[in-house]
Image (tube, rainbow, N blue to C red; front, side):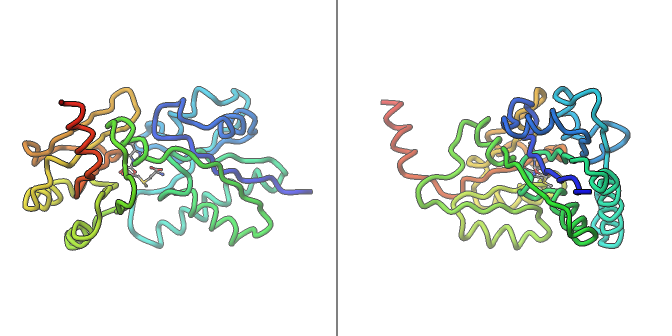
Length: 249
Ligand SMILES: C[S@@+](CC[C@H](N)C(=O)[O-])C[C@H]1O[C@@H](n2cnc3c(N)ncnc32)[C@H](O)[C@@H]1O
């Protein structure tokens, strides 16, 4: 019997209308839809986004991906998740994995897919791209994320402040993911470099309870949720300054 296909489907950053037509079609027709298990008994972000689109007859599979750094715990969780998905694939059933944001952008799906291919190399895997968080944040801020020859750097997590210093010396635009746990240290660096007025925080971009902070000068101690990111316009694009001057005159 032919094994099923595992689809990694990007479901966007919160607004359920940010799923692509292809992603939505596949989600609606899948016999099995998997997503990361939520924290504290609550549905996870991907599950919340897709809930309204799923067929009532589909099997829904919450997979446990613990939020820890320990490689042994992580590897065991990926193996367990891969075997849960394999139970359906081996019977010829397709499985969709709903992924918050974009499936290729710092996503848990990559670990699931790699582990599954190690264990069962015959499995076919396909992905559907989508809206990732920096793009969503730029949209809700009403800013171009980057333009012309401006250099964009994304830091997926900040483990050492020196890393941020080095990036600020080089890039024109910096995006910091997972900023919630290091916000106060980041604020100090941006303060020293006089970049706070060109820094933006977006919490839960595109969700109904989204929050946007456009000037961080008076906000040294923001308590941010996990789904928050920070954008720094390190240098100022000349054509944008020209445009805002034209608007004023
Ligand atoms: C493991 S990464 C996943 C990125 C995701 N695959 C994407 O395409 O954006 C998680 C980090 O992405 C950022 N993020 C994801 N969704 C977000 C949202 N709706 N609003 C703000 N930040 C978000 C946060 O910085 C969060 O800590």
